[in-house]
Image 1 (cartoon, rainbow, N blue to C red):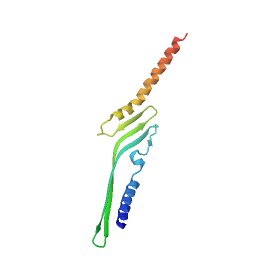
Image 2: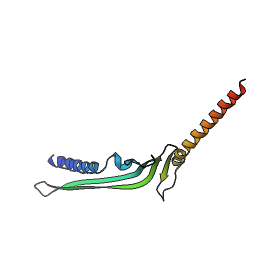
Image 3: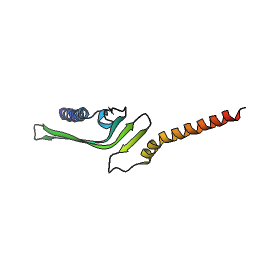
Image 4: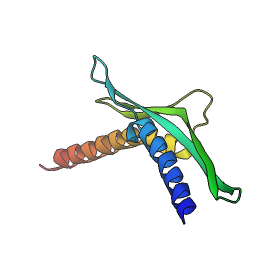
Amino acid sequence: MENKKSIAELMSATMSGLRDMVDVNTIVGEPVTTADGTTIIPVTRLSMGFGTGGSEFGEKGSFGGGGGGGVKVTPVAFLIVSDQSVRLLPVSGQTETMFDKVVDLIPKVIKQAEKFMSSRKQAEEDEVP
């Protein structure tokens, strides 16, 4: 029973160490605001893994064990927010996904809808005597 407790403590210590290395700002980084008011937010991909193991040795039930883990942080894109638009700029070498294209198109679609509604409203006002 003592060895099961040792393995649980070993796993807990390994996970705690990984948790200390990673927080939400690792994936969606701290926003940086430029002089012109544009905000740039880095976005990364996080991969992590860990392993823990242990065994009893000899007649006396001696316990030996170990654990380890690793974290890989890969830059994926930058989210660029300005007064006129919101863009997702992929890091070079990354292929643009359909989601990226949709995010880039949203401000353009909104502007076109606003222009359309404005022209319809103007046309209706021009028709009223």
